[in-house]
Image 1: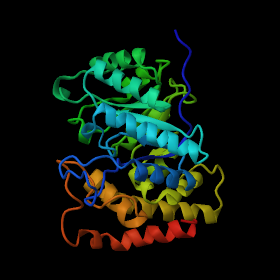
Image 2 (image 1 turned 60 degrees about the vertical axis):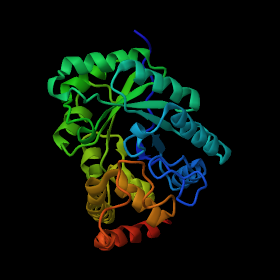
Image 3 (image 1 turned 90 degrees about the vertical axis):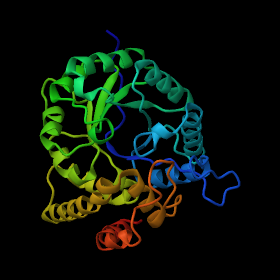
Length: 331
């Protein structure tokens, strides 16, 4: 068997949105606006400077299903070159896939490696979720991993993959593959997080378990998780990084215990915006709070911003509460 591959470093990652040109752009198209690589690079550098451990490009938040392969290459290569030029050489980039058949997934991973990604994260195939067995999922992921030039993480996000199921024993089986080096669990089942991240049959030095929700970061770290790939870290990066550091503190002081409870409460509360509106909510928050991109900068059929005239104002209290922490931490 081949030598096991090395996973990305533990920590907080941001599933970066893909930025598109604003309405003022000469070649603007309201259905399929062109890429805005300059904003993509500037945002990536902002996150790196804020302490984010790495980026996930072209995941669900990155609208992977809305991009052609040539566009995927432009995003990854643009960010890689921009980070390198800013002094963030070797900064971790994980590239997402969202195809259903093995050949397309492998092709996306091959293109991602050539463009400068260091790892891949592969969304579970959900088209035939109702009749897909665990054995079938093991066969599918094994076929991808056997042929992928990048080591891969398993990505389980039931909400965008037809509620396909992956049970903890499936992860334990796939974790034995030398080219499968972790997983991202974008659901609220802490028991599954525990059964994977604490499983003694898995080598957790080379198979890392990330949660996709910062709202459960503290409990996931407590059961052996490696960190989070979290949408709210895209607009409150320092807060999530600080919560991660406190969650890993082996002997927290009373003051640290109080701080991490306070931060987890605020993060859990503001994360409901991400749960409610997904990519649309993340893009609006990134635009309003950090000034990157437009509040309505998604491709069809996604909504043009959070629906409702005053909806953002309904989140003002908790957003301001987390913004207070972000500024305290230097943001």
